[in-house]
Image 1 (cartoon, rainbow, N blue to C red):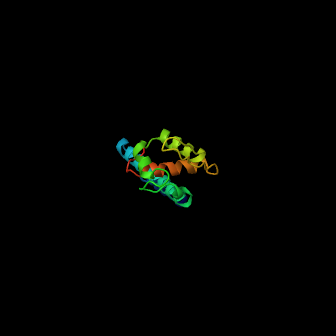
Image 2 (cartoon, rainbow, N blue to C red):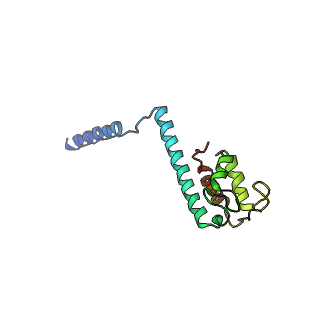
Image 3 (cartoon, rainbow, N blue to C red):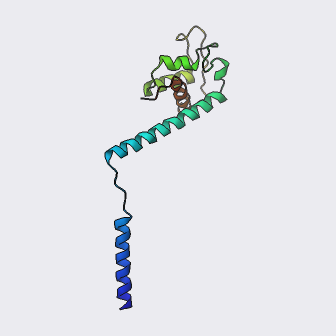
Length: 135
């Protein structure tokens, strides 16, 4: 009899745990808001990593955040290019391969030692400097 009561109590408590401890349902608006927040946080993290990479590199030899040195300021670059994935990839390629003719006759040195991922983080940082969010 005691065994039957224990089994019944166990089943009842297990049923209560399953019923009460189930997954919280979210509506689509909550999901979209949470997903957007997660994407914004991820983008923010990539921008912060890009800033650290730029500060640790030789970029400051030719570029300043707001003032033209040899090349354009990073903010000037951000004002010219929309903050889009294609522009992130294009600027990352320019960072890695170098280039000339777009901002004047002095060529930008190649940074072939950078990974595509790091160059894209750096490009995201630069493109964020005018306050635009990635779209």
